[in-house]
Length: 301
Image (cartoon, rainbow, N blue to C red):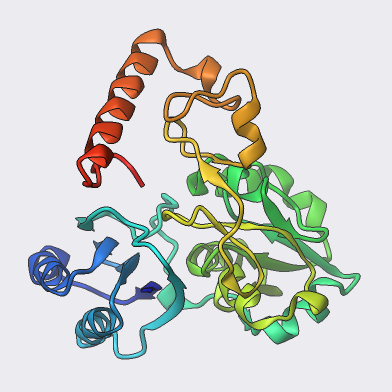
């Protein structure tokens, strides 16, 4: 059984590059896999490994400047959901492209999962899903607005074009783990919206804590690891991943005439060239050869 820890924390790192190698070395030494992002604004990522290994890395992270209060969310899996360990340096730990947005200067009002249903069912509340379109497509809260954005960086333009729809409304926002809402709620406050709220701990915390019988969530939640999706109680969902476009698919989608394992699905078959597909087929061949040797190819999940 592998412990999976999803985490983020906003703080000031004057020299994030100096933190990278010690963190990577510690993760590798403890058999941890996953991805951690470091930037001047903090740390973000998901890692998986043994209980002791995860605890060691979390202890290291909480010892970094300003990270004492770092909060993480846990789940588990029978198989390691990541192939390798990566620690990357980024401009932002979640990319919005708005230099004036700073969650350390204030965010929306946090709403605990147990209180979320009461908020979003109030008649004067508009609920906005801040995730990408392919994430929303497999699950969201009842009545939530889907901005249909392909990346988080598109959200400010969407808000500017649609803000008239939310006149005299309180705004409730949510995302997978909470990090996008740290920025999106700060952004809305900068636009003069004071009555803005966000789901504390994100969808993952809600699915973990709120019983399915009481839930207003419909579908599954996309996650950025080998599980692909999770449902209530963070049980692994039914989805698989298209290795070409990285979109979640249901098992039945494999029966679509445009589906080819690791090469294309009905979402992306028209978007890639024959040369792209040939390259993907070679990758699949190498994955199959590695599997036959009892190894795990770096290009597989």
